[in-house]
Image (cartoon, rainbow, N blue to C red; front, side):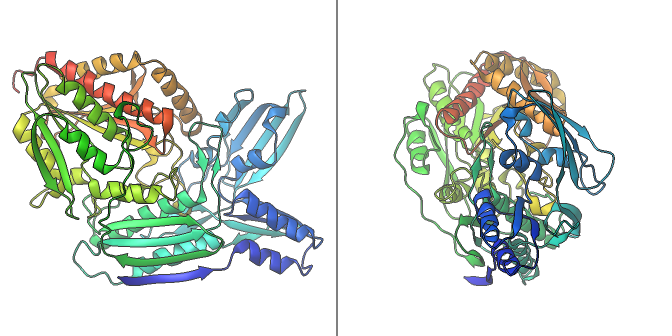
Length: 574
């Protein structure tokens, strides 16, 4: 173990209360990264000293204006003119208002791009009796250069005294993040990847999550900090390696931010050896599993499927297990858990394989958990924050995306090479998911760099990648799969509701909608299998009935694709 950084931080709210309790001002306004309860408590402390204080959220300020200061039930219409700034995407401040348009079906919400770059939302409210009022909602931001030299516009703290315009207030949340991340960026890591087994960022902040009455949406400063740490540090190591930002071949090791609730604000960054333990859980009936199943249950379910077992090894030594079930049908490869915080695909893959194994001609390979090291990180992090996305679990223990691995020492990816060799399949159904609620990086430009299309849910959608000579087959397969999925009660309605909210706050999806399902179809010769169908279900953080619906949709996609490929005529040159 090597200690990289350790510090406690003074809480901004405590500092403000101490400063202004002595009567320095009569009116204080501040924007900080704190939950509502903490901000109200600080206001009350100053009110007791005769100081009128208003402490607002620097994170998603327009949303918090409606959550804390307005009663939507009193309104019939809301019109928002949002700022547009040259240093960020045109829709960034519209995205920050998400999911405002979904908070009340009874209120007509309209949004309009502003004509200046001042950090104010201009809001017009119309009450049910027709009265109008206007409000200017401040959204403090700063233009800054990040750890990799990029210029960003990011939310920041602000302080105004006695009605003045005020100035930037560097909050505890910001100081913690920049201090800890900078310590990693300036540490001497040597020249050979991977640099560590686990880089652990242990943080405590006194911020409670707030569930919203819109799908799986939640306001979570802790989750946002996890995302900012994880992806910022990936970018730091990408720059160090000379690779492009976002390159998935990078192998720094496992980066694990653990952001927990605590009364003190603290950060400790250190390298650690692998945690090779495995969290246990009760076995769930697979068809009605209401939460991710344990790695032990994955292995048990896999052994119940008749076929030839084969395996690869992850960096930690954990096995990546698969089965080849030989039959008379055309073969299909089924995989899940490439990104193991995307959990419905793991259950859906096994359910589909069990169904196909019971068919007379069933012919397939099943590898339901391709990244077991990431899966254990996900289980470990979910113990404290079950409703967070935990993208630290997304990549392998090397820190790379296994699909992009090449050359010798393939580790986890060797399972795919062997699957193709054994089966000769022309179709690979690769089950994935993505965040079921908004994904942000507030201290690094707000919109997740390189993942802008994933920041807001837009329903269950499909990605079809195919070789140049397989365009017709890809189109036929997508049509048949989406027709099958459209017959599942409620699934198209689910898509429509998410897409509508997405389009209000993010604009056009850019997808083709086929039989009610957003689809991306493209030529991609990177895969050795000519047809690769990738599912994207909004499943990160879902449980109970929502989880069952998710892995059922994943299973049905596999079955529909399997049935479709049996009768699709292959290209003459195949």
